[in-house]
Length: 167
Length: 255
Image (cartoon, rainbow over all chains, first blue to last red; front, side, top):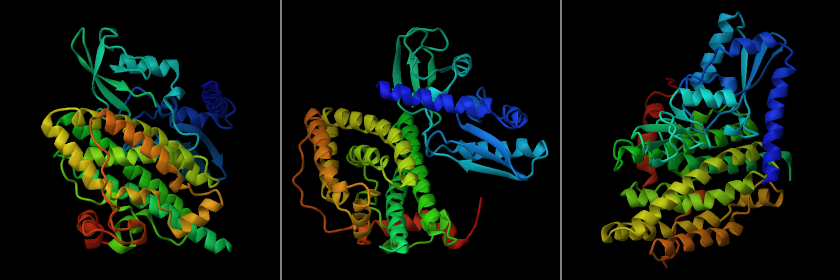
């Protein structure tokens, strides 16, 4: 277990370092405007999909890690990245898909978790109703409206709600 | 072995793993609009997408190795049944919900240790796919195992159907543990997973779950089909006809 925690900490630290040591911070700021089409309160950076963005000669290279293998939003995210960069004048965009280390909800920041709950989605690993805060909840289905969510119901206020699955 | 021989083996191995995932994904996709409840419909569609996404990653790895100008679409939509290398358990008909559960459970219980081992492959591309897909299969197994328990230890009717689904698929499970020639060579190089070694842990999972579900382990003989070698059942061709119709009618068509 401690080995796993170390690995998580290491990959999270590496992500933060890529951003902090960015050669071109302006590119990062452009992409902060690009949100997950299915969870529109998280930017691709906060979601943990965006890993790096930098210039390589005349190209802009964007490194992205897919959430779930079959997530149909991945292409929409790539299109949104291209279009955001194009509007800012970057016409040659190369997107690199990086599979390893595999995407994990451990990469979500505490701000991102708060944004999820405010949007009515329980944060990964914290099973509580986003409406009334009750922890008395029951599972309706292990898969919800998108690959990253499961469906629960609150036993106190009776509302159904999405849970961002711990992954 | 020559570098060419090595890359031919890696290509064949990655395509075989992709074919398994694609054909399973396609069978699952047939459930859309037919599932017993809306929640199960969403679950099955999500699992189908995970398998189809996995197929794309394996095809992409194969094509990185081959570098022959072919695309993922060429491999998925423009090969005939005898060129597909998927194991036959994935091509067997959709059947009832118990068959979908049985196929998912029997193969999830294999995929979890398989992907865990693949994550340690000496091929970095395959290892990355193993690491990623393992998380998904672990989640799939939780659901498929739950359903085996609910249906097996359920009503007389659900128990009867769950048992007959396991019986119908059992003879096709032997293929899960049989490496083909290229795979044998890749095992020796630490690239492919030694699937024969997974039979024991797999049987452990199956025996324990079936016992909890008040079901029995079938004694069916192995089927004579060998999907890896292109010896398929008659069920693959109609599946491909359905899946490939667009690219066969309008080659190269894009959305």
